[in-house]
Length: 443
Image: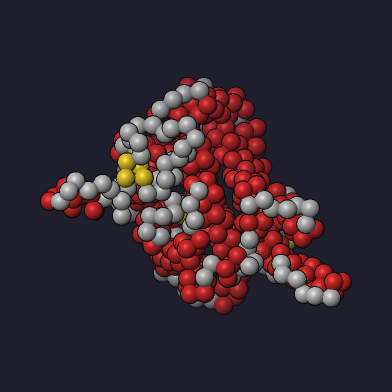
C-alpha cells in the first residue's frame, strides 16, 4: 500500500487505502525518471495510457482466436479478466497485460479437427501446469528458475520474441507504405519532440492519425467497413465448456515452456527498466498467468501470456504504473461486450499496424539486449554465445518443424533451444573444465 497519511481520520483511511502514490505533479515524467508500478500519473492521463495499452495489444490478441477459430470477443473478455487477476495476485508489483499467447497457435491450429471443446481442454491443462510451476518457484525460490534461466536466457527469449514478430510488422508496413510512414512519423514525432500528454500517448496518437488518413484516402478495407455497419452495438460473448482429450493435451503441453520463459522474461525486463528487485514476484506471475489461462480454457478464450507489445509501450512512455493496466483490463472487458467495437478495431488497416509495430517490436528486442548489458552477459563464453545464436536465429527466422500433426514455430523452438540448451551446455562445459583442471568448477 502506498499513499501519504494526513494524520488520521478519514484522510488517513483514504491514504491507507490508496493503491498508488502520485508521481511528481501527476502531469509529467522527469528526464531520466520512470513512473514506478506503485505510482500513477493523474487519472485522465492514466486512463489514456490504459487505452494505449489496449490499442497496443488488440491486434495481436485477436489474431490468435481468429487463426484458431476461437470467438474474438470471448478471448478479449478473458484477456481483461486475466489482467485484473494478474495485478491482484502479483499485488500490483508487476505491470503486465495478459493477451493471447502466440505459442498456442500451432498446437491449437493442429487440433482444430478435434473441435473447440477439445482445444479448450488443452488450454485448461496448460494453465494448470503453469500454476504448478509457479507454486514450485514460490516454494523452492526463484533460484529454481535462475539455474536454468539466468539473464542470458531471459534476454534471449525477449530478443527472439521481438525479432520473430518483426516480419509481421514489415509485411504490414509494405502493404501500405505511405500510411505506415505517416503513422510511424507521428509516433516518433510525439515520442521525441512533443512534451507532456502527446509524448505519453505517442502510439495511440499515431494510430489515430494513421487511421484518419487511411479513411480519407480510401485505405480502409471495404469488407471490414461493411462488417462494421452490420455489427450489433451490444452482445454477450460466446461461452464454451472444455473437453479433455489426451491427444490434444500432448500437443499443447510444450507451450508451458514458452509461457514460463515469457513470464520470467517479462518480470526481468520490468525489473531492469524500473531498477527494482522483482525476483520474489516470479512465482506469483506464473501462478497468475496460469490461473488466467485456466479461466480462459474453462469458458472459451485462448491461453494468455504477459504481452511483449506492452513492454514496448512502457519503454516508449517510461510509465510502468499498474494503474494503467487496471484501466486496460477494465476497458477490454467493456469492449468485449460490443461486437461493434470489435468490428471497428478490425478496420485498422495494415499500414497503420505496420507503422506502429515496426517500432514497438524493435523496442521489445532491445529490452532483451538491455538485460544482457545490465547483467554484463559475457558472449566470449562459448556457452552463452552458441545458445543465444541458435535461439535468436530460430526465433527471428521463424523456424517451423512438424511433430506429428502439429507444427511449432520460431518462438517455441527458440525458447526451447535456449531454456533447455543452456543448462545442458553449461553442465557439459563445467564437466569438461573439471576434467582438465582436476576439479569440478561451478557454473
